[in-house]
Image (cartoon, rainbow, N blue to C red; front, side, top):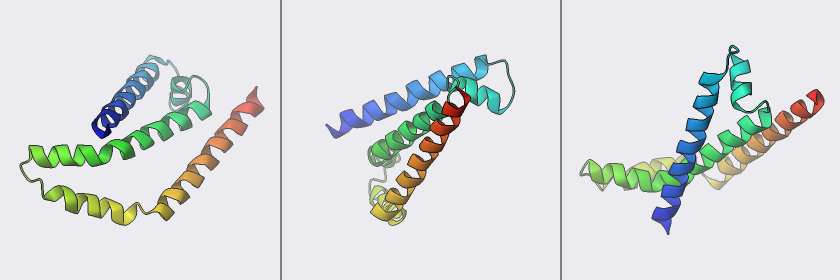
Length: 116
């Protein structure tokens, strides 16, 4: 089940990245306007896509670290890498990051509502 979730997370990252880059490159405007266009004219969509990608990276990171360490023929390194990640990704820091992210989404949504 864990491997399936990792594959799903990696697939979501690929789909969102492909769609965003395709729309960004297809936009004819400049700078931030291209990001806006890639987000389908909504800052909320850009923020939500970033949140989905961040969540998928967090979901897949454990299995990807194991896979890379096994590929490098050093499976013992996975535990030290995961320990280093766990040192900074405590429940408190994840909670603070989620509050910041939700504040960003709320701000983006209010910003786009005012333009409608």
